[in-house]
Image 1 (spheres, rainbow, N blue to C red):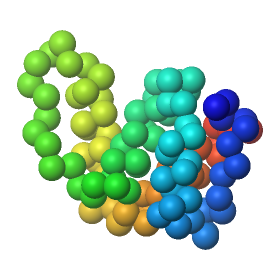
Image 2 (image 1 turned 180 degrees about the horizontal axis):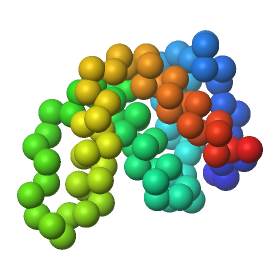
Image 3 (image 1 turned 30 degrees about the vertical axis):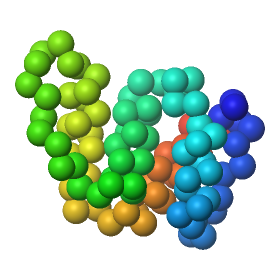
Length: 95
């Protein structure tokens, strides 16, 4: 589904169910890489919480390292805030 076609919930009223619907409807690969990485980081923080994984050690794992580092920077962010930031960022690129 194209990003413009996704009905995004209000940031103030987002529920876990609404958040899951949005995640399933977004095609992350149609987005610019920097936005995709930030969205993935917010999504992981909202679903899992703080990043429990060690940083990739192999230099050939560039994408995984970028994703890990972006998510690690969100340490301590409450899941509800991560959901809101995900929606805000998605709305900013939707228009």
